[in-house]
Amino acid sequence: MPKRAIRVALGLLTLMACSAPEEVAVCDLKAPNPAPCKNPLVLVPGLGASVLDVLYEDSYRPLHEICGHKARNEWSSGIDRLWPSAADSFPDVVPELEQVKECRLADLAVHFDPETRTFRNAPGVQVRPRGWGCVDGISNLFEFTFEGRVLIHPTMSSVYEDLIERLTGEHGYVVGQSLLGAPYDFRMVADDAYVKRYFAELKALIELAYDKTAGCETGPKRVFVMGHSLGNPVLLYFLNTFVDPAWKDKYIRAFIPVGPPWTGSPKAYRTLLSGDAEGMPGDNLEFLAAEQLMGGLLWMAPFPGAHGERDFVAVAGEEYGASVEDYKTVFGEVAGREEQALILTEIITPRAGSVRDPGVLVGCLHGAGLPTEAHYTYASRAFDSDPVIDQTVEGDGTVTLEVLELCKEWDRVAAKSFDGGEHLGLLHEERFLDHVAMLVTDCWSEDRSGPPDAQCPEVGTRRDAE
Image 1: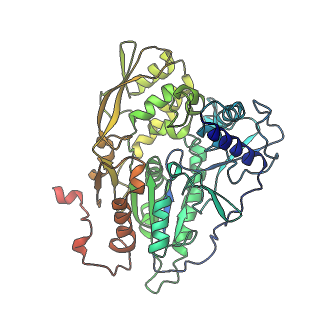
Image 2: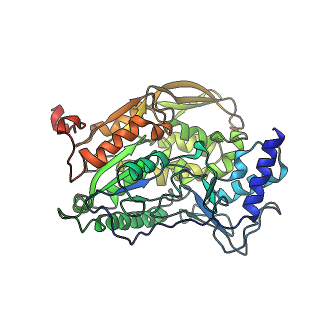
Image 3: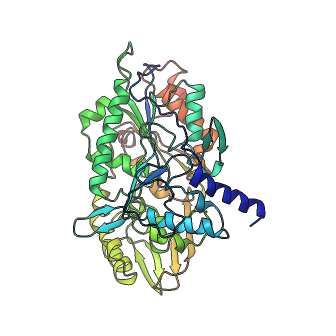
């Protein structure tokens, strides 16, 4: 590692330990919509795409003395956070950063109680997503400003940033009023109690966004909800289990899923078995302890019953698919991880029933044409080394095309694929931004005043195919 990079890494460590809290302009959720005839948009992020802040209680005992430097009983801010951590972004040649990284991964891990079927944080640790209703925690996860200056702005941590800039800069959307964020703790979404609390908050946020448009001369405006990746199974579960048709008719203009892993992704299967560093320095296995009970990953594993008899994993000559029995065998008996097997088969599997038509207008968007992991071979039943990726199929690089296209079976769907569009990278492509802007500001706006309907995407129905 170059000396300059080491100095930068140590500088980041100093910032985490010593800098004053970042002054963040909190959006005013109570303010009326300044453009009352604009359909609001609520953004739901995917796995790992919410900044997670941390509070250390008096009882917290860090792995290393350098960790937990944040004053007890105060929430982190600025560059200091649980996820993503600056320490994870540098190779393991700076001892101080390596120790911080070990602490962060330990604090990020969740613990499961099989008796109560509930999840909890590490002892002495509280966690919450940053900026409910706002977008600072889902725009660029590592942008850091201090005294009005942008000190850090990496492109690799950008999520909804480009879409937010397009809608606010060119189309009059206002953060906290017509453009809102619904971040969540992606580690906890295998916990049914957590999901119900999040859904209650999401429902209230959508109703608030709708109420903000009450001053519109043509009546209040229904809300667009957009998810990316894991955010789409979350939103679909919300629409199909938590709210009724009358509520959806009143409050939802359309659901716009982007890169939806409707029935799961093989990559999640692999990550649950042997970890994934997701491009950060370090071995994949190093991240397994923090990932193996991560609710978002468990939810993204291939759903039993949705993939036929297809095999995903070979271990010492034995093939395993995604049936309930396969999960009990490969995670429980072979890997010796009964907790993973129990969660997958008894908590996640019942959610497969929610993968059905949500009964609202849907604009299903995804990439295509990229090789996407589909099968793995492990040399050892210990799962102590990376597998060989020995089969790929077409998809967006993370989710297979077959899964991405399931929404085409629903009523009132305008599906569009973007050839060469990568799972996360698609969010930053001009053709994607143009398409979304067209949908929410023109074609599907309830006060549409743009070009003729012929220029808008055709909304198919099942009846069209009959």
